[in-house]
Structure formats: structure tokens, C-alpha cells
Length: 540
Image (tube, rainbow, N blue to C red):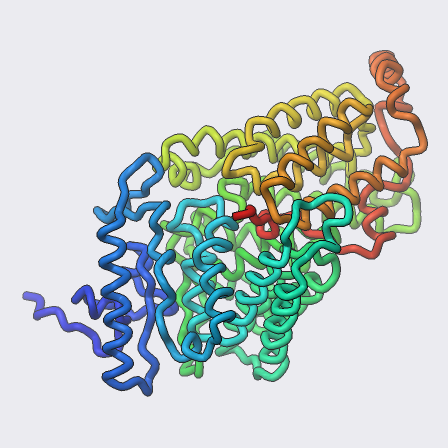
């Protein structure tokens, strides 16, 4: 017969208040993770007065949650508890702890802005998978570098005060911009001074990822890649070339709390998505990334897969995003040689086989059943997520065919795919998933072949920029317009000619063997661009 349950003296405050046994997982225990509660641990040197203050604030949060619980079609049922997406527990006031107590009123405002607004709108996944709240926020309570990075991110977002358009970059709130620079510098100073070892490097990696996201959010085209490269170096230094080892990493006694497998998975997944969406190629092989992200397919997964499927950045689109990384890597290989890429190129057969293999895989790609199930729990989102998946699939096919397979955008097949992409954009534009449209809108834009199509794409950019503080949309449009300006033909006169030419098998319009494409334009500009969802933030 089992003995009586004992309450741990070192468990989290929330479990103490709820009189539940705490698993003591950090940065968030099992019960707080499962039920969506804020999880805060007492500092080792705290006294009874500090404990009383913590308990009072936890009780206030739990009472507020109980009184404001709402049941509607957007609520998610988790083990008998109802967690309303509209009344998320993170919307309460921040809990006090040693780091938070050092913040001035401006710092508290920036922290609260991240907690109540920014982290909510970054994620397109249901609340339980919003790791910007579930992982980064608890870590910020225990690491000053992460906390300062979060406040810098908030300040960058708050500094964008006008609708994006021509000249919008010069119309930023200087006071918030100054705050963003201040907290970025403080975070970087921690990064420089902190001794990183195998026991603490994951906390440093989290700090780097937050800073990276903050830079991408403001439309940076260089510094974010330097930060990501630093993060790649941390991973390689501590786990070697097999990055999946990070998931099973076991640390001994450390100055920082041990991170559970879910937290390690999220940190690595967040790094992967930034890397995949880079225009310069990936730091690690995409097969390594598949090994990490598809734990459910491993014979002996390094981490429980029950809650790891859905990513807050891209929802069910993970298969497509990995193929986009493959496309960029293949395109960069083609461009490395000084020889023109044609049938006489030494790697012609190898690269063409790889491109056709990617094309086949893209056609066969389907959403993960477990991923999709998370959206079925929220009723109306299911169809919308499927629309977004097909849209991303179509954009990736156009991208592959026009870059690696050298299809001309004027050929019938690309224009057919362009029509599908355009129609599917309209299904998602204006919905809560529209923040994921930066990449497909860019692909749609650079493959326009006449003024009518260009005007439609320009209207879509203007439309979404009315609702979003998003410098990545602005960057994408700048590159798109440079592609248009580079074209040495009047596309408005070519539409009818291109159709007849293709129908008579004229390869002049079926294939584009010219050397310059949007990758070359980006390289000439000296930009390292990233087009992920993380940089796209809705105007509150």
C-alpha cells in the first residue's frame, strides 16, 4: 500500500497554494504546464515575508482565473480544466521575484507588454503550445540576460508607431528605440561576461534566441544572423555535430536550474526555424533538424512527444518549412561554382535529381495528424490551418521550380500555381493566421508577370501593413520591387506572347537560365533576410 503523499519543501509556490504535489521540473512544473498556471520558484535565500508575498499574488491570480473563466468555441479543455484563450493566466500582473523586484516602472511596463500582448500575438498555435509564454517567460524570471532581451523586444515593437510604407522606418518612437538599445546592450553585456559551459549554455542559447527574434522584429538584415551563428557555435561546442544529443543532455550540479526535455526541445526547435528561413542556407544539415523535430518517428525518442508536435511559429506547416531549408541549401550549392549552371555543369545530374526529389516530396506532403488534432479542438481553426498548409505548399513549389529547376515565371505551369497561390492568400488574409503570410506573399510578388498582378500584390501588402507592425513585410516588399526593377523586359507586353510561346514549346519562356535572381539581389544588398512568423507582430 502506498504511503501518504508528501508535499515537497522545494516545490513551486503555485503548487503549495493549490496544496498539490509539485514535480519540481524547471522552469515550469508538470501541473503548471498542464493547467496553464504561472510557475514561480522561491529563491534559496527567501524568508517568510517573501513567501507570504508570493503566496498572496498566486492566490490573487488563481482567484482571477476562476472568476473570469469563459466557455466558448475558442476554449481548450485540458484534463478537466478549462483554460480560456481570452483569459490566459499570463494576463495577470507579473509575480514578484528577485529579478522583477529590481525593475523600474518602465521595465515592468515592457515586461508586461511582452506578457500580455507580444507573446500572445507571435504564436499561431493554441495556448498550450505557446512556448513564448510557457518557456521564455519563466526562464526570464531566473536569468537577467533573457529578461533584458525580452524587454528590448517589447521596446522595439512599441517603437513602431505608424503604418509601414515608404519611409516608415524613419517614423519610429525615439524614446522606445532608446529603451530597446539600452536593454539590448544590457543583455549583450551579460552575454559577454557570462562564462558559458555545458551546464549553463542552454540558458545562454535562450538569451541569444530572444535577442535574435528582437532584431528580426525590427527588420534587421545583419545582426540577427551574427547572433544565430553564435547560437550555432554554442550548440556545436557542447553537443557536437549530432544536435539531437541536446535533447538527452544530462547536466550535473549547476548554478542554473536544470531544464526539462520540453524546454530543450523548444529552444532547439526555435533555433531551427530561424535557421531554415535564412536566405543564406542552414548551419546544420536539414536531416539533423528532421531528426529533432520528428521525435515521434524515432525508435527511441529523446523526449515525450505528446505535447511537442505543434510549433507556435508555423503551426502544422513544419514539413513545408523543412523543405524550404532544403531548397535554399540546394540553391546555394548551385551558386557556389564559378561555372554557369546548365547541362554541362559537373553536378548537373546530382542537383537536378535532388530538385526533382524535393518536388515529389512537396507534392506528397500532408499535415501531421497530431498537429492537426490540436486545431480540431478549437473548431473553426481546422479549415483555416489546412488552407495555410496548402498555401505554403504551393509557395514552396513555385519557389523550387523557379529557382532550382529554372522554370520561367511566364510558363503556364508557374502561372497556374501562381493563380492557386493568389486565391489561397485571400482565404487567409484578414484571419488570425495572416501573420504567416510574409514568405508566400513575397513568392507571389516576385512571380507576377504583369501590372495587374503586381497591383494586386501591392494592395495585399498595403492591406496587411495597416494591421501589423512588421518590418519583415517591408523588407520583403523592398526586395520584391527590386526584382521587378531588374527585369529587362516590359512584362505588361508579354502576357499573351508568353502563353502562346509556351503552348508551342518555346523554351525561351518555359525556362529562365539567366544568372540573376532574388538571391543574387539580396547578396548584392548585403542582406541576410529572414521571413519567419516570429518577426510579424500585430498592432494592438
